[in-house]
Length: 106
Image 1 (cartoon, one colour):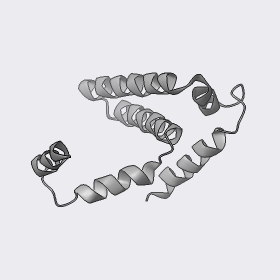
Image 2: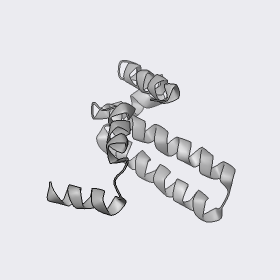
Image 3: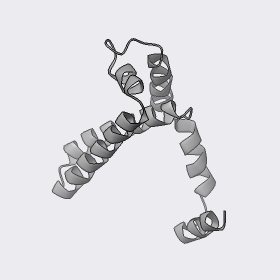
């Protein structure tokens, strides 16, 4: 796993113990899942708009925000980036159609 993702995941776990008035992430955890998911949705929309506008710097910036908030959501659910990376690894060598068909059988 990328060291940056793991380092960030570790920090996000630590923020669960921080005061909500001193940490943005702690304040998201304190507000609950709906607030976290709202931020994921907002950042996803901003990422789509940046891509539509073709502004490469803005795409990178907004994607970083999206990934960050997805990591917060994962941590809130007791998951981490390695869980997602394992799933992506599982999909290597499968066509997208084959992978989707396998999911539909489950």
